[in-house]
Length: 247
Image 1: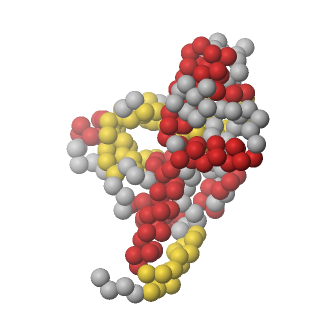
Image 2: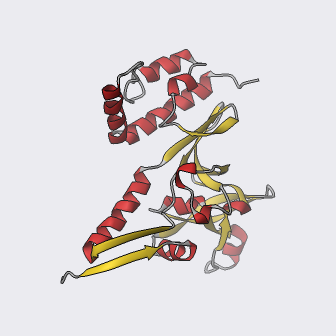
């Protein structure tokens, strides 16, 4: 394939973002939507398979009655403002208010409500949150380079998710990867000690580390993020089971 150099400046605003999203593979699955007025309706839900950040903004839904009457009926688009929750299989998505101050974007100014995947519920409630693609960015070089850069941006979004958590329903959402989890878990010493020792498969937590040790620990967390995420969720679940609700 003949290579050629081009100067490529891509402006991603809401309309272009939707066009890109429409190229993504999507599929309908059985599920349930709880709408803003509390009505629960069963049907088929269509989501994005490899661009989960769009599922935080909207879904397509066909209610069971409409599908029974016409299997070729088209789905209707529902945004976060229209729903309280939706569920596909065992996975529940809750509407969560969160202002991502690290990545403020024009398309986020209208609403800071997102449909986030629920990870734990109880005294510590947590959800998975993906950042959105940038409103604008520039790129240049060969066609192959631009495609690689676009793939890298997508991969960074997939790997860069946050586990947002709040304890006892108080305060703002915090990213579990960035906070003192030993402090968060202190009400249940057995869970706290297990997490500190790496008993959940996480990197052991060492108190009073020097700068070099902290940098090494951060690098390990980034490398083993999936293991860290699994450990955090397991610790939160154990905490919720073993800790009585706050009064």
